[in-house]
Image (cartoon, helix red, strand yellow):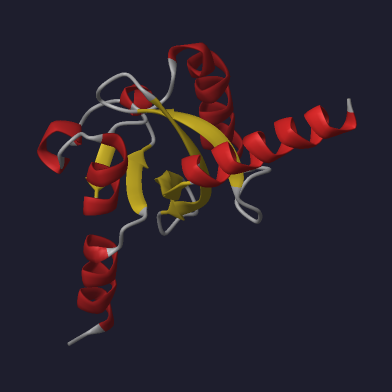
Length: 139
């Protein structure tokens, strides 16, 4: 088995979401982890805008940042995971952490961005409950 086939099998099988979107923000890769987290099948997500997973109130800043990265090739994200809300197919919100990598062509032009996303809703809810409890005890 070659390394490309191995990588494809890893991406296909991981429970974290692996999503790749082209320069225009159209989804080109959507694995089973993305299906599990967001509720859209790979067939439904293919070719759709990332808007299907970005909550409405976050879309303007998302796209402003997206096109700035496409124009400049620079991002402040990538080294450390970023915590953001995501939008599920049923309209519910999910707490996510994700990291990105830019994919470039032979000339160094960005072709798109791949993201690995993890549902951290349970952890976020536990931390919020703990913080509330500490505040109650300190009152």
